Image 1 (tube, rainbow, N blue to C red):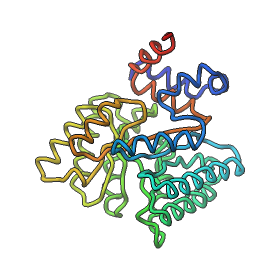
Image 2 (image 1 turned 60 degrees about the vertical axis):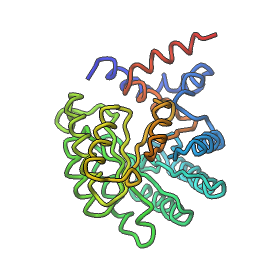
Image 3 (image 1 turned 180 degrees about the horizontal axis):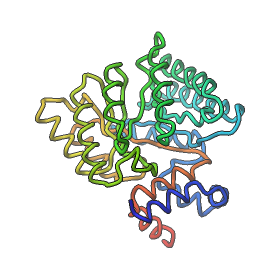
Length: 308
């Protein structure tokens, strides 16, 4: 892993720098490349625009590791409002939720209670809740909660999970989740993890991503392949074509603000495309992880910073 990426990930956890950036006009200006705005309505406008281009959306109210039940319930209320608005506006969109935002760090029971309510709301409005994956220390408890939510009568088809190809355990997790009929969003992983739990070389992560994506494509369940890597996309397209897998059987997923021309090209080619659209005032950790994933984004931001 590069020194630059490690530094950016470390900075994403710096509370003083976060406090400064999230309250500065310059910080808000720079983050706008990857963050749709500060309020729900900002994100809904972006979702409407993407839907008009034939692109589905996942909305994420930014924030993680809340410290109190009050904060967790406030975060859940925002998501309930999003689900209500998605139904009212009839948008092709769903939501992504981090369990630490629902209080996982201090009360797994509260996190499960709040998330279950969101899943039930999503089921009632024809939407879907994707449970995001966080650091590897939370992988097992996240999987356990999603499995219990999936077993509840009624809304089992309204909850899914994220699996990170960077982790050694992910193949076993994928196989177990598929056996239980749970929808998966496959990504490479944005967290700095030790060699005991994660691959350290990009080539290893790439190989595992392709291996897992092929397993997902062959399953009868609808999954999402989240990547901006052209080689990963080409590998999935080639595997699907060789095995007679229709483009409607899966979707590609990418982040708001990254490779926008590729979003449109995949739609033109007949593939399903979903863009992950984050919004909110607690944008700093997410923003720094995006820079860490692709340092070329730093050059883009520098050019825009000094643009007249």
